[in-house]
Image 1 (spheres, rainbow, N blue to C red):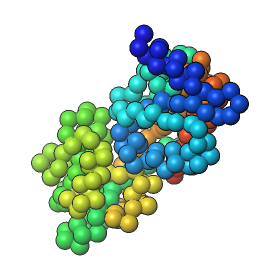
Image 2 (cartoon, rainbow, N blue to C red):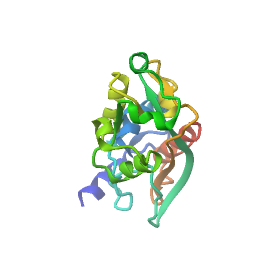
Image 3 (cartoon, one colour):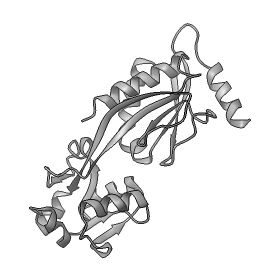
Length: 220
């Protein structure tokens, strides 16, 4: 009932004559910290009367009971009753701070990563499986910093602790980072923008949905 009440308030706040209202958006932690803020800044410049409630969750809020209005998902939405747009896959690569590379050198092959200080997952099963698939000979003790928080891993990479996995569009734009093995993609995250079909015709929600579709589609 609380979720339904909150959704009703957000729906009632939508302006009739001009785009206005509050839209609740769910994104993964890394997306919320490193990717979506400039997108929302551009949205605010176009539609200053639309307010955003930003929910950071790596598990994903439930759209069917309308906990949120719009979600950015890195896993395929399977529920019925949703409006779904698949956008660009987000490429992941290896990066390090220039000071780290000056101290330890730069690996020329994937095999040479085993002699480097690496930043990687702790207990997240999907991240551990990805690391094992890409680097089957990598031992856990080679990871000098283990964390399941992707923003924390990025902060550690920026601090020069070791080589970490970063979204390519984030790493390439960051003057504090240099690509390592730039021809090697660790993974590509398929990405979907999702809303509930009952909300898709509310003007402020549709504007946010379409804006995020366009913004994420432009990532490469």
